[in-house]
Length: 469
Image 1: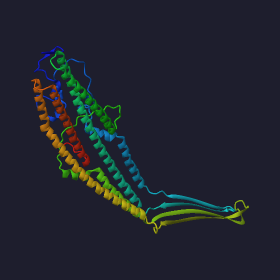
Image 2: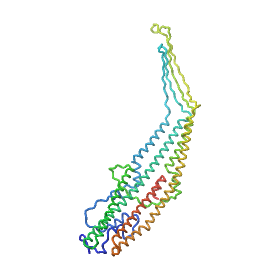
Image 3: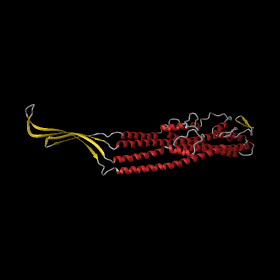
Image 4: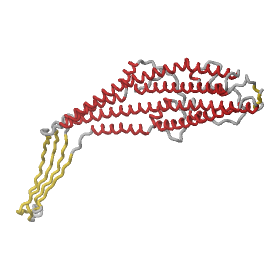
């Protein structure tokens, strides 16, 4: 019997707490490996100690208060400053469309002349000129501006798609880091309990000092890993906060969104959906429409232009002869004043400049838009094929962990632990097997992240959320 803080334990009854990590008597589902199993391993009563502080992982990961993935995407779409700036491009295009629909202003002309040698000789006129914009010039401007507005909306929609994809990927990295941090925190806690027990055994002479030294080294290794994961989780959380556009003073917590969500669409269905709904491809097609409208506008502007004008003039001429003023009867210089109204049409004759250069530029722009659209279609085909293959591979790997690796690793540790209880193996064998199980668990977390990211990539290449299928 060994006394540790007033508690008696037999050799058979003594359970090395570090070997109880991730083990329960009941079967364990894969989704419970990280949290439920570790919680079950802590159900034994530890020695009375001061209240332990809240672990760092619990400050980031919260199933209740944490921001869900879809809520995080919505928050980013509403608060990301860079995206808000991009949306101002739509406002600019809307303003250009409004401007394109405005009719040209009339032009007012005022002219006058006077003979410096004879101020009695003078001419004054007021004229008004109004451009007519024949041939549908204004309609062509409106068409170009409208097509450009449509393209800009699709461009911004594509930037929203890319931002949502970045948020989903960063969210998954945060969850992975926090899951690993939580695993190391629980592992560290269990090893600290085990170290206290083994230290008491060494003091009583029931265990070799080497076992205490081995556990002390193991504690240092786990603490170093915990610190590394805590730092990585904090950095990734700040990067996620930046994508969301969340103020630094606002608390950010996430949820464990590593959940299997099978996809029912085939690769052919996904390709059809991507080619029909990807905002960047729709924007490329809209760019072709813009180029076609620019060609029509350039051809219209190469035709004759008309302006009408009207003018009212007043001419005053003085003579050397004198005449009598009928009112006063006094002699005065004779004047002749004439009013004049004239009107006409100004025609721009496209004899030399038929806007050939702008027409050629618009045609080249249309060809460029067509080539970019065809290239993007080929890229989308490859992206869908690659994303679907990645998803299928991730699902197969995850299924392997669910059915084989985790159960085999747990059974191996049970056997080694039983052998240690019977005195057939050393504590180093138990520690080594424990490390293998932890490595498998962390690999399982990586497999969950890969599955999560592959599904997020499918949503990204499709351009629309998959939803729960």
